[in-house]
Image (cartoon, rainbow, N blue to C red):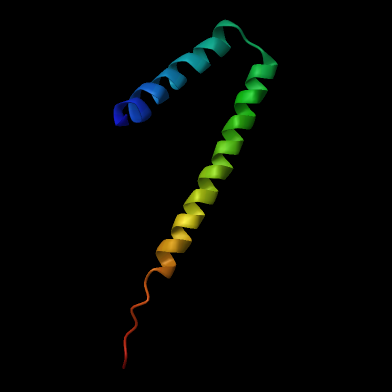
Length: 65
């Protein structure tokens, strides 16, 4: 499962989508690819921010002086 998710699917995506755009250029397909890319960017930033917030709030150790 790990090989499928980390190598085969990304390699197929990176290899097929740009080649398809070059072989059969379509502005609608390019716009769709751009919109999906922007959506994934915002999803990734949101997940990262949630993880960062959880990581920052996990440190409850304080020092007494």
